[in-house]
Image 1 (cartoon, rainbow, N blue to C red):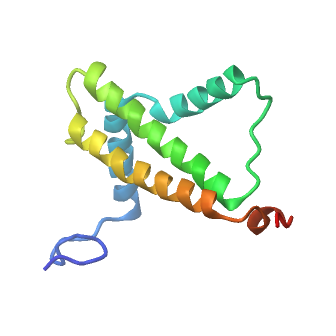
Image 2: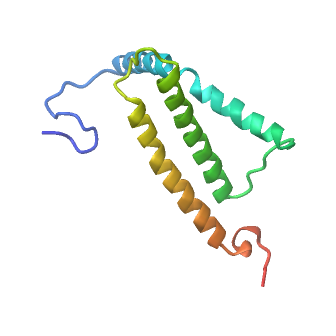
Length: 133
């Protein structure tokens, strides 16, 4: 029987914390071979965009902006991973195709669209404390 939380067969033997950390280390190495330091490139890319726009800093002042920044980060990470799968990695270590990586971007784009629509529908007073009427 498959456990609904772990997605593991209930007959499977559990791992120790050390085994879990070793497995995680191996997975990290394989993913880094496939995707490079995409998580670092995200920060560099966002910083380049900020500089290009002549901004000294980006202020995130409300829940919607924080959520949007997080979604840009996830989407950009997926885009860099997909680029690496298409053009950089000779042989992928993780059984995740470039197509799967592309498909993984779709839900984040949908969430970001929903967030943008919700944000646009909000009254300015909802998040600034000022009345716009």
